[in-house]
Image (cartoon, rainbow, N blue to C red):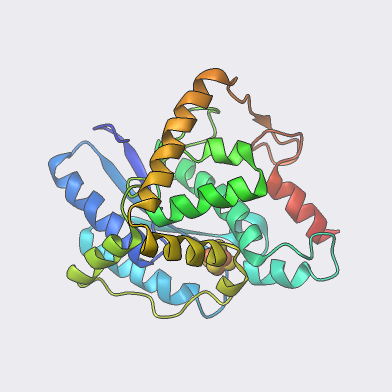
Length: 267
Ligand code: SF4
C-alpha cells in the first residue's frame, strides 16, 4: 500500500480507529524517514460532536509530532452538515439520511484536503468490520460500481483523485479498539447525533450476529470480495473519469454527486 517516499494524508477523525492508525503510521515513519505524514481532519459541522473529536485529534498529533490540518464543510461547500440536514426538509432528497450527505461530501473534502497538503496517498482507518458492512450494503443496493471501487488500494484513475489506502482493512474493529486501550488513547465519548439514521447500523448488527455464530465469517466475505474484484477487474473496462461541469472535480457524469446534492438543497 505504501511506498518509501510517500506523502500520506492520514484521515484522522478523532475516533479510536483513526487515532490507532495514526500511532502505527507514526511508528512506521521512524524506520522510513523519507515518508511524510500529515494528519487531516474533516469538520463536517455537527454541533456538540465534532468539537471533542477535534480536540483529541489535535492533542494526539502534537504528542506524535505529526502536522495536523483541519478542513470544514462550511469552508469547502458553504454549509455545515447541520445546515444541509435542515435544508433537506421538503426537498426532492428529503429521504436521504444525514450520513448519505456526510459520506459524499466527506470523500470530496478529503480528496481536496489531500491535494492541498501535497499528498499522493490518503490513508483511512476502515477496519475489516467497515469493509464487510460496505461490501454487503453495496450488494443489497445493487451498486456494482461502488462495490468494485472500494478496493484497499484504489487505482490511479484521474490526476485530481488522490489514491486511497486502507491499512486496517483486515483488522477487526475489536482489535483496533484493543490497541487504543493498550496505548491508553483517549476515546471520544459523544456519539454522532445522526448515527441512529445510518443504514450501516442494521448491517453491523446482522454481521456481528453472524460472526458470533460462525467465527471467521467477516474475513471470508472480505477475502471473497478481494478475489472477485481481481477477476472482474481483468474482464471489465476501466472507468474513464471526466470533470464536473460546475466545480471541475473528477466525475463520471457531467455533474458530480456533490454538485447534484447541493443543487437540490439550494433550489
Ligand atoms: Fe457523518 Fe453519519 Fe458518521 Fe455522523 S454517523 S459522522 S453523519 S457518516
